[in-house]
Structures are given as structure tokens and as C-alpha cells.
Length: 327
Image (cartoon, rainbow, N blue to C red):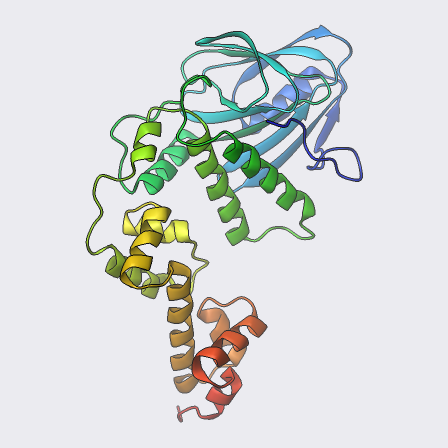
């Protein structure tokens, strides 16, 4: 794995630091506020560190650099999940990992201490959320409840997918946050959160990794109809494929396979058709503007709505509105 964040034009950090301090207690408290309980002991050099924090739905993303050699003692995470990604070589001591130098991301132990010595200048990235949120997403990927309690394993155990998935996912999230000219919308944040959770569950070893490799044992015969009904009820909302898969009780890949096999289309295409049909009926029967109707049917870009509407119905939404029945 390549280490280090891609540099920006300012200070080499993708996320703008929210704290700069020479006090280890300040740095610890800021990181601890959004991750897990830990202590820091100085080893060599004078601290001159920064902390950058961002939120992606239920996920907290932190980049921390201490500017000095320190030892970080992370307490058992218990009901929280924490992933540490070394941005430089990191000495780690944890259950079944004794004094090894790691350069790839690893989960902090849930029932034991994890001791780390991060690179003083490269630092580390930490992702943290409730364990229940990770378990919820695991159920979405499996399409059912896992057969065993979720527990993350040492980094030398086999994972369901390549570690590169995790590296790609956190870099994509950091780039999206850094390049945003305005606060990211809820749909984008949700998509990034789902992408990171999926990469965590595929790229890190855990007790359900074999199940993710095998896929669901069975698939409900009525999954497409259930998904269609749910889309009819929720099409005006900022729906993602993960939302639909969760409602249908399958993983996103299994759901898309069902759609291709039974309908010859994708969930996204069906959602667009449902929204266009709803807009068409509203334009004929409601005394509202085209913009109001488009937004009420789940469209956020009026120009794209007009293009898709014309491709479907052979006329612009405004032309349909002119043929509106009297109210």
C-alpha cells in the first residue's frame, strides 16, 4: 500500500486542520472526541501537531500528526469501531500482532489495548463509528443477518477482498472532501459513507469474511416486486442503491443481479422511470410549476429532468403543463 495523503497546494494535507497545538493533551482530546479513548506518551522531540476532522454520515474521519515521536495506547473499543491507517510506517503491538511495523490499515482491538508508534510527521488517518453501524451495513451486504457476531481479526488473517479496496475508498473520500467548494449534500455523504463501510468490511479480516465470499444462502423470489413497491413509496427521497437493497433484504450486488435477470434494467433506471411517471401525472393534473413538480418527484437538476422527460414523453415538461386539465 502506498502511504501518505496526496498533497494539496497548501500544507500537504487534504483535510484542513481544525487544531494545531504543541500540547499532546490537546491533540489527544480532539481525536478522542470523535474516535475512541486513548492515551499518548512522549518519546522523543517536541510535539508540534495538527488534527483534521470530517464527518461522513455516521463515520468520523480524522487525520492526526504529532510532530514528535509518541506512543499511542488505544483502549479496547468495546461498542465502537476504529480503523487506523498508517500514513507512514507504524510500529504496532496488539493481540496476535507483537511489535510489527504496519503500513496498511487495521482495526483496533475491541477487547484489548492496541499500542502504536505513528510516524511523527506522516501521522495516521483514523475512521470511527458505532459498531452497530458497521453491523447494519454488513447485513446489507449479506442480505441477511450474519451467522456469527461481528469481530474484527488481526491483519494477518484473510479478508473477503483485497486491501487495496480500503486504500482506494479512504483516498476517494478525502479527495471529495478536499475538492468540495460547498458543503457536500446528504446523498454524497451517504454514498461516501457506504463506500467506506463496504471497503472496511471487504478489505479487513473479520468473522463474517467467509460469508461475504460465499454470498447469501438464499434469495427471496419476490425481491424485485418488493423493491419496486418501496421505490414507488420513496421515489421523492434521495434514494441510493444501498437504501433499496436494505429495504429489499439483499446486498446491492445481489439486488442488481435480480434486476438485470428479471427486468433487464437496473435499480437506478427503474427509479428514474418511476420519478418520470410521477412527474408526468402531476404535470397533467396539478396546478404547480414545473420546478415544484420536479423537486417533489425527486429530481434535483431541472435541466437534466427536462432532457430525460423529453426523451421519455417526446415533449418538454412545460409543454405537458400547457395541456393541463382544469383543476
